[in-house]
Image 1: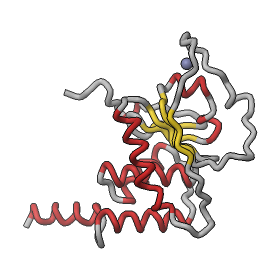
Image 2: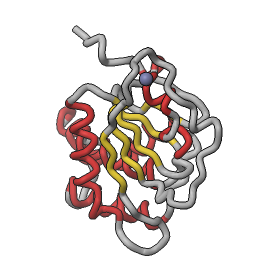
Image 3: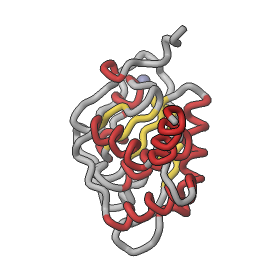
Image 4: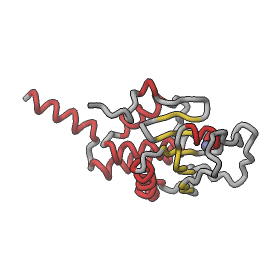
Length: 189
Ligand SMILES: [Zn+2]
């Protein structure tokens, strides 16, 4: 029987700053990741932060305090990844670390928000690599899943190359999509 914890995608959370991708994984911009009220409401216990937000000044919306009855501060795990797309480096060096962090949040049955400044390139890349690594999706399947939930996605060229490298590393010369296609062809042979 389907667990109550597993939501249908139509029930997934979505607003202008943040969208739910799986039961526990959220993708959002820097404003959503600073919004205590939202983080509490969504039961988010971990923040994977790719924003490099040293110079960002939170606005009134993002500084919204939590209004729940819990009187203590909500401790949250945080992993900051300082990576700038466009500087020519590969993001693949961080993929395993990021996936382990997301795994830990999911195992505790708390949400994890993956954020970057506008959630158009770095944060979607981090979520896509996770779906490829843990849910055996091809790059195109993972991209499609994220894009359908968050159409603002515009992955930087250098990050695309990282994702393509990752797909080759995970699946060898052929993608999960081509393997899948061949297994269907075998069934009919
Ligand atoms: Zn709260």
